[in-house]
Image (cartoon, rainbow over the protein chains, first blue to last red):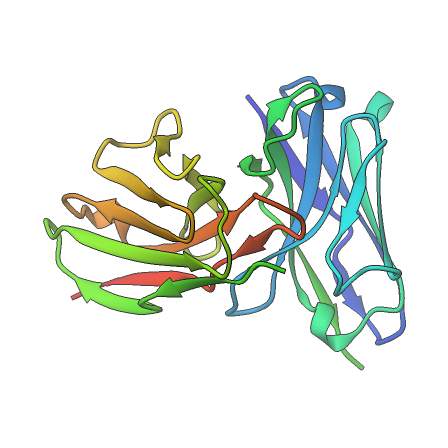
Length: 123
Length: 107
């Protein structure tokens, strides 16, 4: 069974940092591109970042570019999001999501999602 | 960035109704469109990809159509478990973008 379990969320002050993790199991993690998608309270979904299976290709939304860093450790089946210079508007539930295609071809739509971890940025 | 506009943003319907949700892209995206269902407090669930291909395990009452800029999600006979919020997503190009969502409520 595919499982994605996020952790690392919490309350942080504006300007602070936080590192999110996503532990993957039930599939060959190293074969799939992975993503972070967030959802502000009561709002819609916003794609944040994508990383290819070998970390060769990385993409970010303009809203987080230069502040967030996506990475992965295929040996530990883990995905990360380092979030720096956090802003109030970064408050959201952060989901990790698996690309629906394995290997070199990336579909960029998501077939499995974690349960999310809440990040609250407030003074 | 490609803007995805869904309509309506919310509506009420009854069990057994046929419902249609529309998603419009600000520029052509061929058929690179996915639909998700999200229930309160839960992660989104993939329903449809490539505009009209049903994800494995999704009931056949769900269907999608469209290409270019205009797309629809249809639920042929609304069931109680279908009351949720639905999102479209384009994956034609980065940044990947979602529509604002359509909430289907019980009448």
